[in-house]
Image (cartoon, rainbow, N blue to C red; front, top):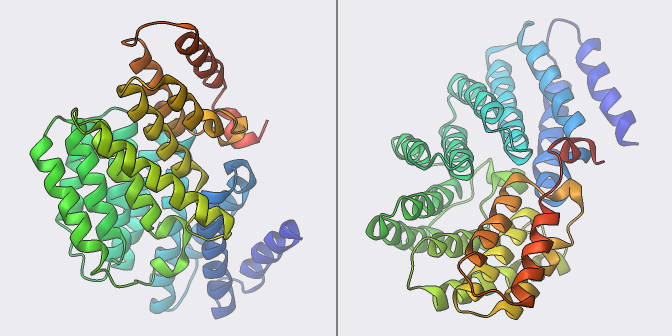
Length: 336
């Protein structure tokens, strides 16, 4: 049925000819909402073809004729879809392609004059750079994001502060990282839902995700191992609760990141068995869900184990992590 719906979307855009109709625009917004909602919860291989098709439809329509209000809507849609494709490129471990998609997304956001989307794209660019270990570049995108008026950006303002915290922590600026964490705490109770938040999924920065980012920040700040463990455990439990309720807040990738941070915190305290236990659900993820960020989080644990006194438990965990990370990026896109 989903394939038939995609064919209907494409046919509708063709049937209306060179002039864009309101039905097509509405259908595209519904498709964008569906993709935003599903993206954090299913393997990329299930969505990638639909994302590419939606991008093709929007760009084809923008080459035709439409009323000014519809032009703005199409640019907004183009920005949202390119944002998701930037995330997809990042997830398969291709940061250069991710940045290309993000730049196109930003051009679309500019043409739509939408600050909420502009802000989200800059934070996504920072996130991509962060996981590529381009930490200085990640900070540059944070500063670009902070220059955007954020009055109607919704939960993206919390995302910005949280991404800023872990970025500055990764650069060794403890004071600035902790300051940004305090901003996160302040903003979480003040944020008003925005139009993009209502799309759900990737567009909404949830409280579960906030807890994960806080734990991730503490990974970079030695001396906070107990707080890191508590924060990561709280994040894991929040994700487990969201999964049980089939809530839109659940995201398999961020839950895996929180579990990896919990494992890291326990290793830092010499608790190898507890670290292994925390990581088991991550190690059991199917290959098509082992995104670049998840693998990087798991390999960070492997690096920490090199500084741990070797025994059978340590050696076993190292072997499991090495086997886990041996997959090609194409498997995320193809599902094989």
